[in-house]
Image 1 (cartoon, rainbow, N blue to C red):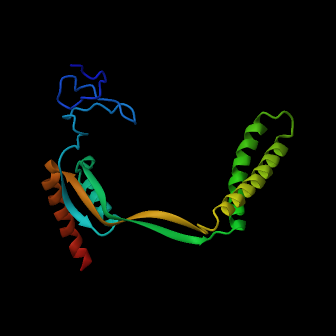
Image 2 (cartoon, helix red, strand yellow):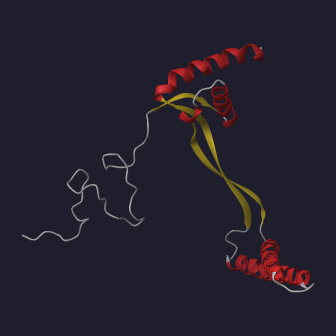
Image 3 (tube, rainbow, N blue to C red):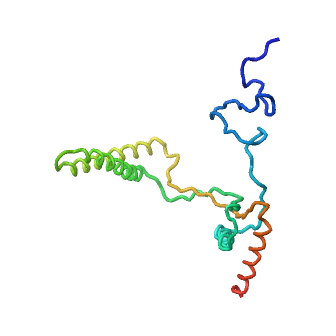
Length: 195
C-alpha cells in the first residue's frame, strides 16, 4: 500500500511530527505553546462594569490607574457595534474635479520639491510651481473622469464611523475583586457630589 507523499495530507495536531504545521495561503502560522487547535486566548477575564458611553468607561479605567491598579490587565470593549455613514454632501463632476485638483496639487508639490532640490541655480521655485500646476490639472482631469465613469451610482460624499451601543470594562479574573472594590469606592465618593 502506498502512502501519500505530501506532508500536509494527513496532518493533525497531536500526531508525531505535529510540531511542523502545514503552510497555508498566508504563509506559515506562528508557533505557539497551545495544543495546536488555535491561538491561545490569554487569561480568563471578568466584566466589572458596563457603561452607555466611552467617556464613562474611560473614567473608570482612569480611576483604577490613579489608585495604582495594574491597568495593563484591563480592556474597554465596545459591544453592539453599528456602522454609521454620515452623508456630507452631493458629489458632482465639478466637485470631483476640484477634489482631484487638490490631491493632484499636493502630489505635484511633493514631486516639485524633489526635483527642486536637485535643480541648479535659481530655477527651483519655477520647478516647484510648474509641478504644482501640472499636478492640479492632471488631478482635476482624473477626478472628473473617475466620477463620470461611475454613471451616477454614488453621487454623494460621506464619512463612515463605528459606534458602540455599550462599553464594557473587563479585567483579568485574578484582579477582578480588587477592581470591583476600587470602583465601589469611586461610586461612594462620587455620589455626595451629585446631590
